[in-house]
Length: 96
Image 1 (cartoon, helix red, strand yellow):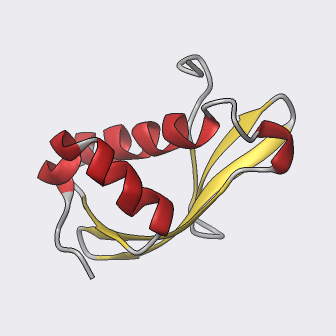
Image 2 (cartoon, rainbow, N blue to C red):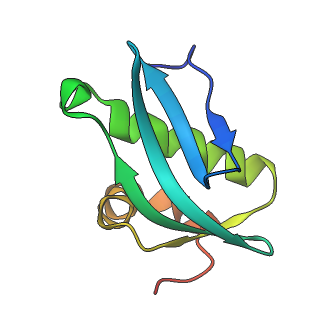
């Protein structure tokens, strides 16, 4: 789901963005070297329960892995996602 929608890396504001039906979902990050510190995931109330958050996380993980980056998960949602999808541990630099 949402495969056709492009992931936007808005470097100016340190957000990975996904626009769904005119609404903006995003993950706030900080980058240091090859590590992306994923700080906060936010999905507008209009999109809650529609699978936007996991789609966004998957797109971000795919993008970071394809570009040889690692993640440091600070975001509570991303920590839960990693527990549900342990196959992504391969891109985790370390857990804070």
